[in-house]
Image 1: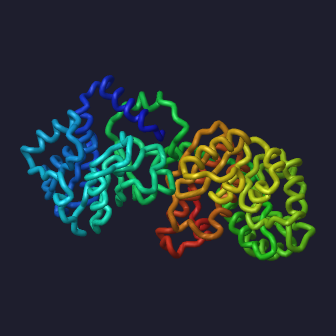
Image 2: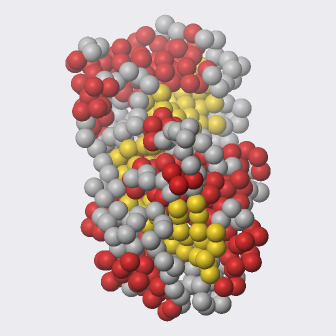
Length: 493
């Protein structure tokens, strides 16, 4: 699924209107029907609906939605905010139609804003994706009233006041919806952590925009959903054996941090690797043999740290970092790993911290290596950024400059390819914000690389399945109570 810019969406609308062909008014009706279908599947017609409309095409959508909901027996109240004298033609056409179905309430002054009790369902159709400047004046007051209300809020296409593909100022008035129902495609704004309060739970509804034009439109931004992930999964042949699915090596754990090695190793096994060897400090030998009987254990000469490498020839992929520590002897071992490794690798956690402290290592990291930084680890690697958009662009340049696959972890983990394309992830939840979740991801990615998935496919599929397992775990344990080992136990595809 592609993510397009505001200008590309406008061009897509225009192309659909011209080439389907369909009138802009009929396309608006199609969008309203899709929104209403989504709403009716979730709320019955005893719910009082209060719709706030601007005077642009987003407001036209709101008027059409009000008419359709009224026809389905919902109690609907429609309020038009007169913040400008101008109105679009399609808004006016829908306003003329609505007069035959419902009374229109005008908001010309702050005093005209109605009381909004908790039982109402508020629909925000004030401003759409064509926003070019912050909401002000009467619009700002209405947005404030929506945000102050205890009622549930649903935004049509995008929250009013939210820019579609650039950062808002912290003082901007923006609706804070419970849900956003986006037309045809997700929006880049939905992927940005700082926009969380202004998006809520977002949903995409198909309004029949030209798929031919979508396919032709170039963008660096994509969304990995269930169909895309399923397409990446390789079938297992009947006569496969353990050698078919590779031999992974994990360099993980140190004194007091053997749990990281256990979590990463367990995830590697659950993700389908044929054979796994975990190289650990000597103090971890008994722990790993008991915790992971399916894995082989290679023991370092040092009691508490990893300071040496095993013979690397047997392995088809290597994962390094979870619980590793940053001692000079460990740094020396990683330096040797870069020199000797001839197979794909995943670098995470303390391995990334050592890279950030030793830029010469970063420059020598083999092309196609997967790195899995959380935002603070990425900042240490690539430098500070002022906002989420700037950080994303920095990550794109970083991936291109170093020829790496970057998994920038977060609510919609961004998998960034060496060509600069960004693939946001559809799965996962806030329950995964717990110690050890990243170690689990490292194990999954190492397993997929060992099975000879290309690095880009391994990253997209691994991140997706990591989130799927987290979603299963949250349903079983709740977001509050789940821990990283629950993610491992819920892996499977």
